[in-house]
Length: 242
Ligand code: C5P
Image (cartoon, rainbow, N blue to C red; front, side, top):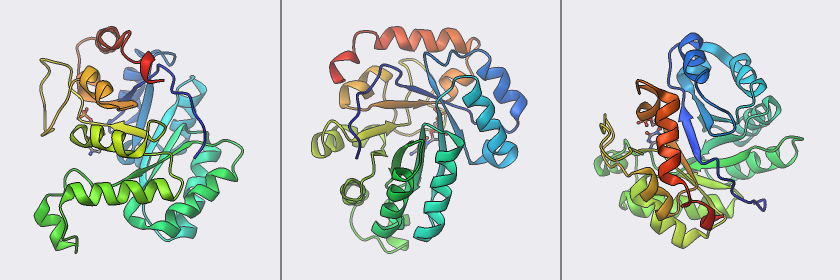
């Protein structure tokens, strides 16, 4: 794991759009000095690496959320390609195992540009019965902790975690282990389909480093202003975590 100083640019705006034009319209309202952006499977599959390059050329740090999960060699090559693309953060599934994560780590370490390498532990869409069906007999919490510790052992820079897991992971894994948290809703905002939500202020207080925020910003009447409102709420609350 590399030494890092967390900067104050903690919000990652989710570009969950089905075409580049919609994404461009949103991005035009964002300031790359104030936030980062996340490109997931849908937008990437539709628009490809050139759209990621376009975002980077505009000054945005891009979280490439493709959650690689394959044999070690394949994941290493994919992670190397993401690093070459110049993304800020890339992720893999921790359930791909030690050899896969270590291969991903080596690929980043061998790259000229080194994105943060993050693991996904247990998808929050997996209920207890779903885990049992794929052979996981412990609780979801136990599995998250097991995979988070394995991720750290394999040199991952951090994990994606739900708001509910943030404080226990922060306590167990140390302040340098990056916690990336979706399911964020400013007080008073609609939960949409998220089940367990926390406010930006509470997520930061619990130890989250990066807040992944989609609809509260992207569906706002004025996304730029909405981001500014959230940043004002966080003002003065993130410095002491650095
Ligand atoms: O619009 P919203 O803020 O709910 O967007 C959250 C983003 O974070 C979506 O891109 C979603 O796929 C992603 N995500 C999540 N929960 C997880 C992992 C990722 O909501 N556990």
